[in-house]
Image 1 (cartoon, rainbow, N blue to C red):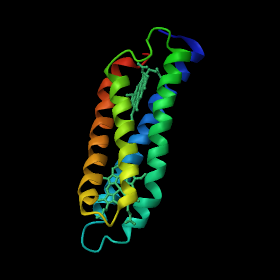
Image 2 (cartoon, protein in one colour):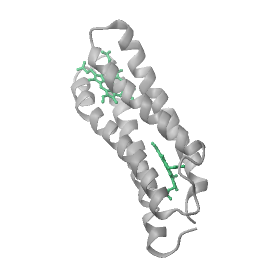
Image 3 (cartoon, helix red, strand yellow):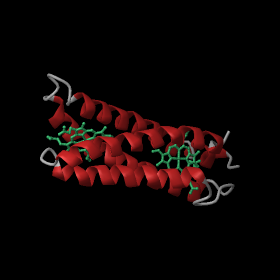
Length: 137
Ligand code: HEM
Ligand code: HEM
């Protein structure tokens, strides 16, 4: 277990991850609400903010790996479920972003894009439970 400054720095990734989760939740929420009656105005907002959620997920992934490498000699890189779920969340958000290029024309993408996004959100929330035991307390 690290001590001193590395121990404090090791909390950076969980802090970034919580902001990312909030952003992902917000983006998913305005995406879904943009489909409700009168919610049209939320669609450009969703399209504008979603790339920030994608960037935040990428930053979270990289910060997790870098933090493990630099400040957690007690942990192994790619050492467990938290790593693999992290990769899955990132892959799902990237897939959602790529699919969004065919919106709003394709009826199939209209169905798949929100489902992929919600799956990413679900696994991102799971990361809290897989990340908690890793915290350097
Ligand atoms: C989108 C969400 C998240 C992603 C993509 C993610 C990704 C990662 C990755 C890839 C690692 C490196 C693990 C390894 O190489 O085995 C890691 C480490 C870690 N994660 Fe996460 N994580 C997320 C959320 C969280 C959350 C919510 C917490 C806290 C409850 C957390 C706590 C940790 C801790 C404590 C480590 C060890 C490094 C350190 O001490 O900073 N993660 N994470
Ligand atoms: C996080 C989960 C997400 C959910 C639940 C979600 C949901 C939705 C929904 C329901 C729509 C409306 C589709 C329609 O009826 O035409 C939509 C549109 C869209 N989404 Fe997402 N989305 C998510 C993530 C993302 C991400 C990560 C990106 C890109 C980085 C993105 C980019 C877009 C774009 C460009 C549109 C089209 C907006 C327009 O027609 O002007 N979304 N999304």
